[in-house]
Image (cartoon, rainbow over the protein chains, first blue to last red):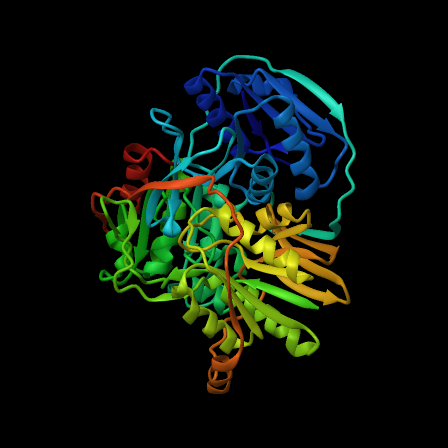
Length: 314
Length: 247
């Protein structure tokens, strides 16, 4: 069977979790076996609804109210062993990254992180993943009987149908070694890597005081906000918004780059975006070569017009 | 405190990505090797800063790889590491690499194990978690800040939509990302001193690879940019709605 770990944030099942459930269910169909989900902690929705995405059973381990990778990994690995899972699937999210590595060691299972497609099971079990910061893909064979995969956010489309999952709740308790002292939210519950649309701006904006129009465009598109490395290095924007080879690598459906020239290191982090729009006043900006749509023009004029046009047509 | 910084060798960030042997091997011909930026700029520099504040810390470096890794270990020593260890095995399987590092950590009695959040070539983000699990240690991933208070690590890590401050007693594994420190350039004194700092080569612990790279492929090429005039933004919106169908 396939065991799928569904992340939740403060009780809300994430979209990336629905992607990973859809993905795990598809692997199950491919291998002729059923898929079940595991959730740790309390959630504020009816877990039987995850049946709509194809899982027959949801194992809910209730009790833990904060995430702890070390403790959660034990719980997930034990469940995988108990259920004799052949594939354990995670989202390649902030939490999933930490869990997948630990669970793979506990199960002595080969691990592929950042998968972008269903495994090829025609000869063995080969998983395609993004490498070289988005500049290439590698096909990796997992050679162990049990396999662990983490799926890149936004790499697999959620499929919803009919169904109701059987929810099996079991209370558990954990003793985390890591003590959480405080936390602060800066951008809602949305992580840049999981945003479907990302609006990003660079040095062409001239200074942090000009970000208002970027934020307005992002608002109208309900998009995540990003920036180029020089902008983060100059402290115009926080570090977590820096996308590129040494920042965050993203693969949204739409990436709008404003006043970013498109250095190779920046492209590496964003070139898996499905559609790229570049707005730059320099027609020679290398980014246009990687773009689907472009406007050669002054961002200070184009961006407010674009925001207005999107609002008008909404 | 004994700090171990995990150092990976990666192609330079501007290196051309190409493959040989029927797309089964990375073409390293003419490639300039660097320290993986996350390992260098954030993990190593933060370790050096901790030592600058408290000279009693020792910074050891570890790289798992063939002799090609030695120049980058020398560079890391020039930046401020005290000793380097190279485990003499070339592998692209994270489990094999993590096993080697876990073995060294166990034998060396390290308090703080620092890694970059991922390498810019494999993009695995799995090493820190694997090492931590092999040794049953706590692991704080994606840390943007790290302070030591005696034997307690205080680290800020990225969570969905924000930041979280964690405290944990050593030994602990921490992966570093942007924000933790600023990149440095080794000075001449450091480069001279690095020449005589110990660089020990150890033979690997026995371990079977759990995965194997079958082949590489390049992403499909873009069809070419469709330009819209700056006074025709409505046309761009129409294209995004009707052609790309994304907004």
